[in-house]
Length: 507
Image 1 (cartoon, rainbow, N blue to C red):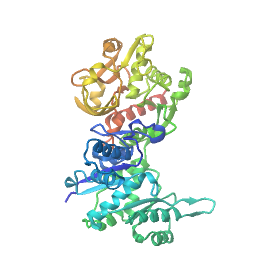
Image 2 (image 1 turned 90 degrees about the vertical axis):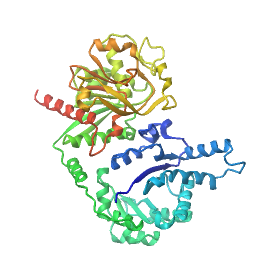
Image 3 (image 1 turned 180 degrees about the vertical axis):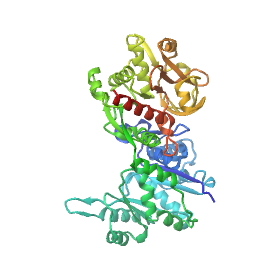
């Protein structure tokens, strides 16, 4: 029997979704196929499960309250006093159990910290669900922290004890503890935690830190976590075939060579802002038997072409990721120019594609003042702008094009050879588009518009002819990469970057 599983994440903050939150605070905004802006953890869920999630996989306190308030305004509660219990908790339970008839198992992560006031309504809803569905149909797993105090030279279990106590005060007895720690703990620590948390000793799992997140499943399997879960839910405990996953780990640990790739952006201090890109490089590196070392370049600190040369002359490939507004834009333009002129593999994603277009328009097409209306609303040559024709698009969040859209790739293009497909679908998250008024001008100079929407209205991909790899895409390919199916664009970019390294070594 194959079980159908749904995975979801509940976040306690009041933002309706993470889409308006600063990457410095929250990290990457992950976008699903149906255009939901979600927590970055959903990216890991997709990568590990190799399945596509949707808007039903993520809810915030803001989203829950917004739904309840709208119902109250529309008279759904028939004049009743609207309260956290039962109205908010009922809405949470409804979210958790949506389409539950289509799924055998629902895995729900509640973000935040036990004891925080902002997450109380979620935990209360979990308590009620456990009561309603029956203990044999619910399993509570508590993730705790067991810190290692260097000065004392020992692990401290008090944080775990207090977390479990707080959870029991709410009315939830954890069935399993995942105890995060920097160092492995012995049986004495395990027994102590079990005694003070009322959790069976074999259900106290040491979630010890590993050097790659992809090794976490093996750490849990060694402690029989899968058996414990199945036993608690009266499920058949079947053997797992992790041969492919193990090979992936082996290649991570034993690369044949390594390359350096620069990620040129403005959020590099908080690298979770580019989490899916980092993981896509892990996948593509394994595919090429290479270790991809990332060189973080803060483009806000780059203000001259000479300075960018000092940094980028040491890397084998250059990537400019997505982002918003003008901050750091000039440093990105310098980066794109250096890659173009020095034949270094270049990959521009979303805003990175815009930067490549602007740089080419300025320095090759001699369009003085060429820019994006995002940067300069009075630009003489707005090669990137918001199209009035886009008013027909329905999948807009604020003013953005969100979610999966089709793209037709041109015959004879490098990118079509990479995809080995004429029609592709990729996920978007952006406001601004290529200005079609400049399409012919750029193409005459060798800037190939090689991918468009099926109606030819929206430019989706561009590439530079006579270059080993110079590709810009309007979408975010990193969202669809996973360990056993790395994204072809990242795979080819890593391959070309390695070829660039070998070529330079022979000089």
